[in-house]
Length: 133
Length: 133
Image 1 (cartoon, rainbow over the protein chains, first blue to last red):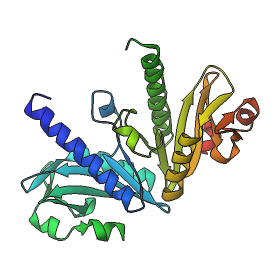
Image 2: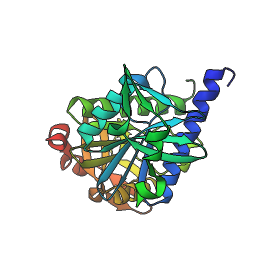
Image 3: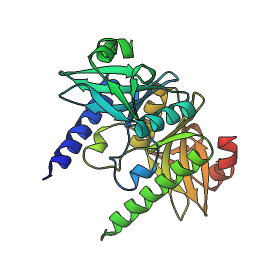
Image 4: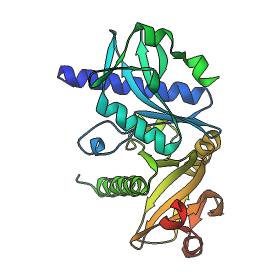
């Protein structure tokens, strides 16, 4: 992995694995999507999904060291469409400040063609304990 | 892709993509697991999952040109555990003779430490139309 982009991609992948593993440890069935490549991009799928006793969650994962976080409209629409079909609850899974927080998709604010997650969204977000309670 | 094993793995991957795409075309949300590598193998996850309106399906995919098909007990137990946690219906998704058929996990016969899917299991299996009806 040489470029900055590759490092960032690998870090994202590690965080997706971390999320899937933690959810499994809490009794959920979880699954990661394949790393985004040319072929994977043609598919609409979340980064990670988890389910327990028939309740299904879909996650778009963002690991960041700075806020606010901007998410492209296209990614949001794909997550929303997947969740709508599945009957799943869509979340942004944000790894920031050393922990996971979960922002329901409908709580992110629209800014032009993007969605914005700021300190206020994060303070109102669910913790891992709250999500998996 | 040079070795026989690589060719077989790539063929399996193509079929997983095919299944996910067909389920999506029929209105399901679907998702493939990452290709099995050293890291992926540590995770318990099906090859493909699909969901629609809160109903969840988990698939172990087998593309074969000959029957009977044998599935290792370890794979079956992982599929069963994932489905148990999720509240999903577990299936073997069999691509054989140019089409998909779906054998509910509990319908495969146990043979020693393996599970066996033969012509009889396939003739009692669900078609794509039946599965997605």
